[in-house]
Image (cartoon, rainbow, N blue to C red; front, side, top):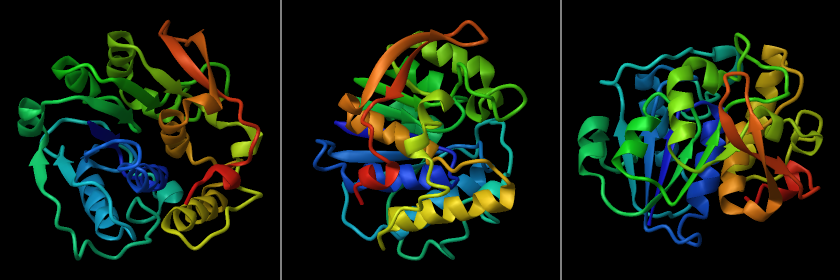
Length: 267
């Protein structure tokens, strides 16, 4: 069983990747794929950030493949006030030690086989092509909003950057939508309660919090890591059918565990 993550490597994508990879073997995955997409950063920056993150993992994990999407047309914004000068909090200086294979997206997709779970943590630009190739066992994504105040041109950021792909993907197969409504739960806000611990996930979370004081955001949520929690711990969430402003029917996760993020971080 493979775990496939589509990530536009900003800070919350980094947090989510660390969380997912730290538990990948115990969750039953034999390998993981990091598809470095455009969104928070251009795809070439996302690719370098995926390599840097993989090179600095402080634990052993399942075999990794990094997928290069730089030859694919993708929308992006370089949100340096939110994600730092390199798009990933300027936490890592280089990718020294990176040894995983790198595959171009089109070639990797053409050869893809086997069962997999899909985490989409950035714009859905390339996701419909993945879903057309093979339906995942589980499809969890971070994106969209129902009632929460949108954060980018009237939409949630991931949705806004690729609205047609978002609508196509959510209509193609069953899913769990971790929307802004899911994430903006008071217990998941770490702005006034930075998580403790010396692990890499804690370092990334605290850097994300620091950046909210630069960007002026009200609250700090590890958006993409909440999607990892929804994949790994579905019992922490209730599912509700909701329709968004574009008429997309979403199966939205609602956090019900009643514990703060610092207690569920798991690293």
